[in-house]
Image (cartoon, rainbow, N blue to C red; front, side):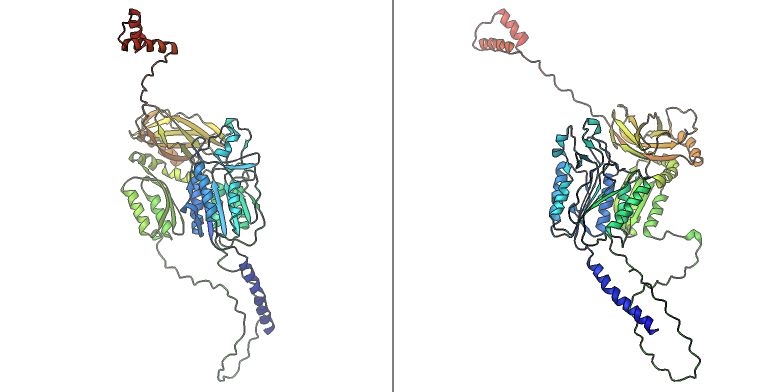
Length: 568
């Protein structure tokens, strides 16, 4: 028995300095990050999720102790502001131990050079890139000379090349692999030369997996990026595989710290003590102290015995879940709540007025902090269609994310609204436009395939349409819905009454709704008519006639006629 206990004590003494040495190799200290999300491009297709991705990563890093340049995500930067933020990032790295750069948006490569695309870029030839874009190596140079122990460059910028239609053949999709300076890890959303997905939900597959992995205690950066790669590969069916380029890193880095419980050391199985034989009672003596190694073993907390309650009175466990339950219970609302600790992200559609105001107050009274609230307030006419479509829309979004994306969200009468539908290729598509007059217009659909099973539909906006909010609904199904012959424009209530039983019975229908604003066309002011150009000879003749008239000389009949006809 004593031999076994001595062996256990020796094991603890041997492991203690090893654990201390491992702790000394952890990279800790001041953390600085620059997070950029460019989605609102002015001259090429917008990216729906880039700014969402930047907000998600910025919020995650702030919770993990990072100081953010600009105190938050930097969104939709033009070339001047992008260059300025990179320079500010380099200055902020002075004295930091960890530097992190994250970019979500368009990125491309030209002859092995990677370029980050600002929102105002509009090149017509490769020579324009130096003046309109930012070389990704500029970021590495800022980090390389800062003296940090660890540098992380995270590029969700391998989206499609938006300039392929301009004859810029040397511009390639995806990014080229960059050389990682000492102590640097570079993570790409997909392998070099490939194109990453923007995602059908609120975030890209890469960024969603990255934000989740960062918050896992006990995972160092190599295990995190390995998990991110596997998760993205699975979620995209193998079409996207994140890539990591790294140089030797001296030490270990944990975004969320080491695991709260240390690894369990297996206790040796000690031989059972013999059962003492019964003896006559004698005065008890204090037991001799037994020297046992002081190895902390986690003691599970005692679980309270639950009090039986009726099932009907069960309440969601956390304040965030209660907030979500109320959000989903609102009349004609499509709200969702995502909570990480006290941080709450509220997204979706809600009716304007007292209901939404009460919902916001409810969140405040429960001690929750509304971190990022992206809620569109619905006009009153939108309640009726959303009450009919809401359950189907929520089921679609829970399963596959948003089905429909609109661009732009503010359209001028006479312009065109572009509708992007995810996974709708080869499907029956119905688009219905609800207006403030209580009518619904069934929009003619001419889908154009855009790759990856997605389609695009263009909807011209008539010049004479009254301005105001609009609600567009999308129904995607394997076969057309049996709604009979319906007029192109009809009362919304009649159409919804016919649609309701079909949605309740048809499980294969995917549904989504989105709002946009139609603006009145700007009436062009006619420019004053410009006088016809005067020839030099005619101008000289007029000058001679005018000079004679000013000197009081008599003008001939021909000069008077010319003065009236040509010299006004």
